[in-house]
Image 1 (cartoon, rainbow, N blue to C red):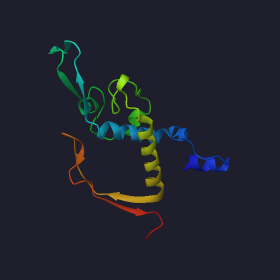
Image 2: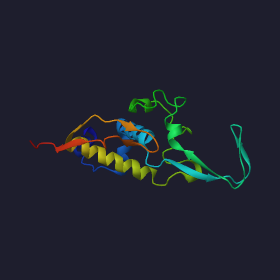
Image 3: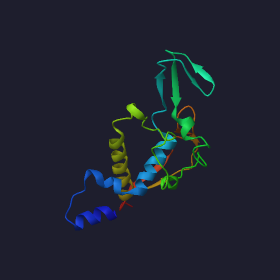
Image 4: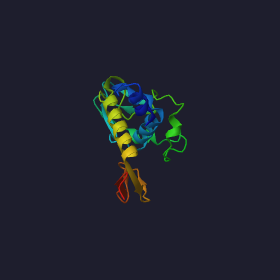
Length: 160
């Protein structure tokens, strides 16, 4: 809201990069991606025999890299099953323990668009609606979902 007001006072429209200047919004999106990424993992084919942690993966075999096992690992994140956007305020996101968009040469080209869309959704949801979510339980395997399908009551702000 402050950014929008500031831009209006300066007579400037919102632009593509403005959403990056909202650090807490970005940490909420990052934590959401860590805990409940829609992509559960990626398949990779071994181009040569390779040994990983004492296991031989022969040339031609496929391996599945399961993102959730990394994103919910206590060795990578303190209290990994707790939603905590503040953990990202001083954390390096370029390390290999955060992979919601893949990495390296196969990094998702839609990364910035996905973050922008999430930012726009959050902005409108928070500024234009009120909501109450009923208690529910997160089920983490095989994919992230809510046990009771996350009942939520949503009302546009200003309505009775």
